[in-house]
Image (tube, rainbow, N blue to C red):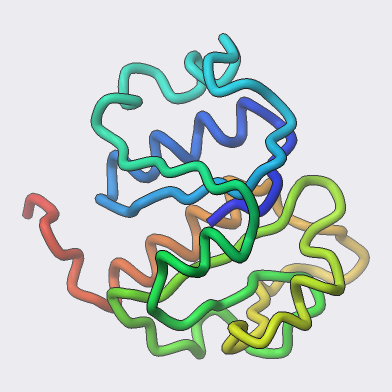
Length: 150
């Protein structure tokens, strides 16, 4: 789930990631672009029709449709993404670039954990879709690459 994404190219790349892995991409408004933005379409290449994407009016509306655990990915996290035992219905939550998830989202009662992707000291963060790719592939690997071709 991308909370209030700002950069259309990152979301286009996330659409491509969803299409390639079978993940469902949830976008929480407000978005920093229109869904027909040319940069979003270009980054997603021809995968838009193959991806499951849902846009929600706010975080509460999104969470109401998602029964699984909510893992917030943040540079303030305390659990490494490799220490999580992922489940098929987990929700991987990512914040907008460049600010990340706001405090009120990190304090939401539905959040199960705050997860971090380790990096060298003095660096701010990974690109949004690069971070989502790392996490999605680890979760998919742990759940047996369901549906993947050999």
